Structures are given as structure tokens and as C-alpha cells.
Amino acid sequence: MSRVVTIRLRVPAWVSDEDVERIVREIEEMLESSMPVDVLRSMLGVKEEDLVDRLEAVDWERIEEKEKERLRRLYES
Image (cartoon, rainbow, N blue to C red; front, side):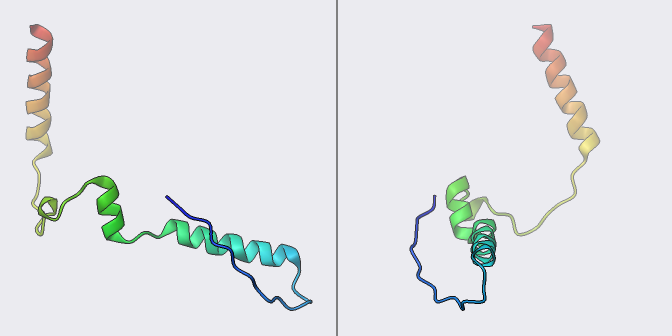
């Protein structure tokens, strides 16, 4: 999900082509590494009502035991 944009730059004669290319690549990487949260939510299909305001502690041992029991029943059948 990207587009191509053509930009013309005036670069001083003392700046090498390699430096210009390096700078442009850094800008590309910076743009690719950031994404607005609303775009990310849209891509992932996360709706506003799916978000949680408050996090709660989770009893991992209880969840693990329930999952083990579920798998036991699944394979016993």
C-alpha cells in the first residue's frame, strides 16, 4: 500500500550522488516505519468498540489448565 511520488531536488554540486541516495533511502525508511493508528486499525480490522480502556490481570495458570483440559477432552473423543 504505497505510491510513487516524483520529486525534483536542487542539490549543491559538492554533495555526492551517493549522499543524496543515502538521504532519500533514510527518508523512505522513516516513512515506511511509521503509520497512522487509524490506518493500522483499518488494516487489522480493529473497531473502536474492540479497544479496551483498562487492562486487567490475567490468571495464566487457570487459563493454561483450562486449555489442557480442553485438549484432553478433544483427543479422548
